[in-house]
Length: 227
Image (tube, rainbow, N blue to C red; front, side, top):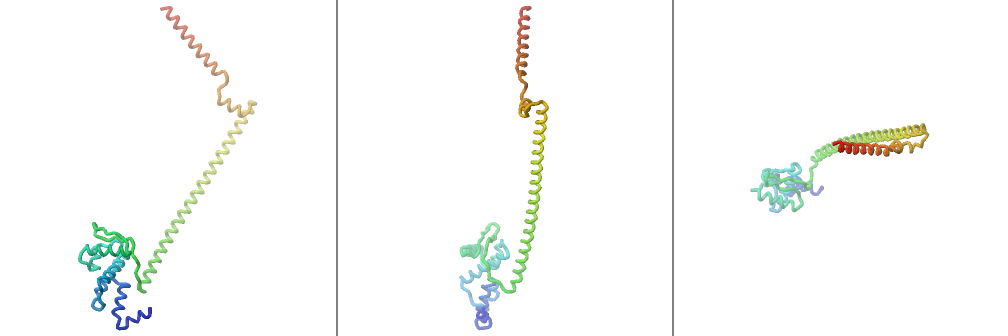
């Protein structure tokens, strides 16, 4: 805003500079100019430290404890973890503390204000993202096209098989009808006769078995008498 920009050339220029640090900078930036800036309360320092973690999270998703301790100027890991937990409860970021590997794993963080000179970087990043989306979309469309071609081939093969089966049924029916006509019989009756044995066959077979059995029994009697 113009009225805020006017502070940069007034007696309140240190306040304006401190405002820009909270908008774009980090706790390290404040320490570098602390002699020319208004002093901060503990609450203000913690807020600026939270914003500094957000800035680091935009560059790294796994931030080592050593980097956080250096950037936030904290004395020990206990203070660092308390600060991170406070930031999580304030919904500044979401993540987990990996105490074994001594790092902060960030899942989400709020956004910060951006400088005008950073707009070109954001534009380039969005363009690269759009290009990546186009590549993925093109790959998906190619896979869909291949799937459709395979589907059409399978449908054509299915229709061909069904047509061959129908032709084969017609051929069998015509052949059966011709064979039945040659013997002056009904086609259905002819098929049943082919499937069932002729009448009297079972009786002849049974009589043969009976005669064989009688012969064997008679032989046994003769054998016993001779003995």
